[in-house]
Amino acid sequence: MVARISVKPTLGIAVVALSFSFLLLLLSFYSPLSQTSLPTTSQQLGEKGIWNVRRMFEWRPCKWWLQGHLSALPAQSNGYIRVDCYGGLNQMRRDLCDGVGIARLLNATLVLPKFEVAAYWNESSGFADIFDVDYFIQQMNGFIRVAKELPQEIASKEPFHVDCRKRKGQFDYVESVLPSLVEHQYISITPAMSQRRDRYPRYAKAALCQACYNALRLTRSIEQKASELLEAMPKPFLSLHLRFEPDMVAYSQCEYPGLSPGSLKTIEEAQGDRKPWTGELAQIWRKRGKCPLTPSETAFILQALKIPTNTNIYLAAGDGLMEIEGLTSVYTNVVTKSSLLSGEDFRSMHGNTKAALDYYVSVNSDSYIATYFGNMDKMVAAMRAFKGLYKTLFLSRRAFAEFTSKDFKGEELSQALWEAHRDDFVMGKGSALPDCFCEFKL
Image 1: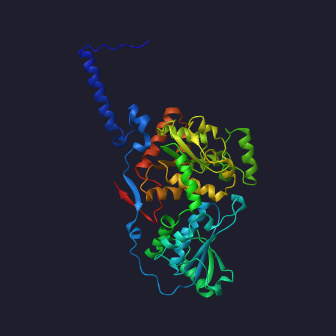
Image 2: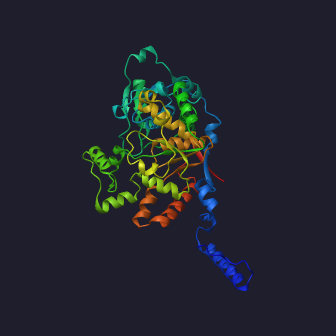
Image 3: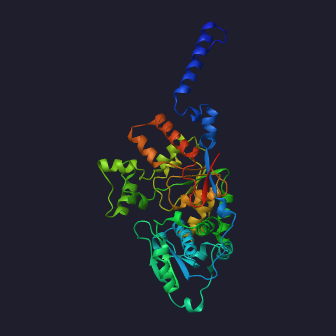
């Protein structure tokens, strides 16, 4: 039964209309976020969503390193440095970027980095198997010396290793590493996480930035495969980096009582002695944003952000992703690299090659959303900012935990998540690394 409303002009209708308009005006003054309030029309809510929100800030490459007005390299090098890189591809890439800055800081000649073989990552490929060596050397010209081959008197010996990873506090390379470099002339390092890049002179920062964002190009064969993968994706598309693998969930020490028995068993096998927090400690841990979002939680947040459920989604994820049906039951146009590549082609790939494909497709996607803020996410977001692509967003685990702990549900939870992520997007939060990028007010 559809109620029909008479269009005959009457005094009563006019009074109601004026009263309703006045009420809306009062509410607009009452809301503390009235100037950036959630759109109310169905077209704005359904079709445009988060990407239609006007940003106030964005990150762009700083001119001081991009324009290349550099100090001349000293005539004499202090020795040779090799950067030893561990972990997944993007962690090794981060270590390499840091290592380049360190080598320039110490006036050393950079030796091609060593990518450590990692059985855990199903990996045996080296730097030259992933990245174009000649292009790297060419792009670093003027920023730092790079040696493709060592002098004969040095090549015959192993470098003196300086492990900086476990150093506590702020680590000073000039005080702690330069003496070893001068003494041994050939050293290898693993950069410390706690280094103070803000103390670097600009020429060292410029070398780091150039290495990270201008000098690392995939080998021709990998880039060709990545281009084919990108071409095969239906356009436009969203690249979603979803992290919910057993080892990651086990490492997080978070409780997930609502998962399937199979997933819970897999997580328990991966936990070992690292048991999840329970009781009040579990709630505190979750509110700090330490717990990975499940695929089902991810789908709910995407809907809160008005991402249409028929969106083409490239799932950038590692092997063993759990509970994926929580996403694909809502967003039905989800594809992976394994579904787009031939079976034999995919099976022959190592972990770093797969990660390189995800990285390439994500950087060049129409939009990018990550459920975590790991090494890949930081690298992808920065490269997208470098290329002027700003439809990039990190889902807030902290906000989701905060709102659900208050027993927000349904539309109330959806509205709260929209506002939290809208504010992050408006401010350009997390969209690039501050070492090489400068904030611009729009």
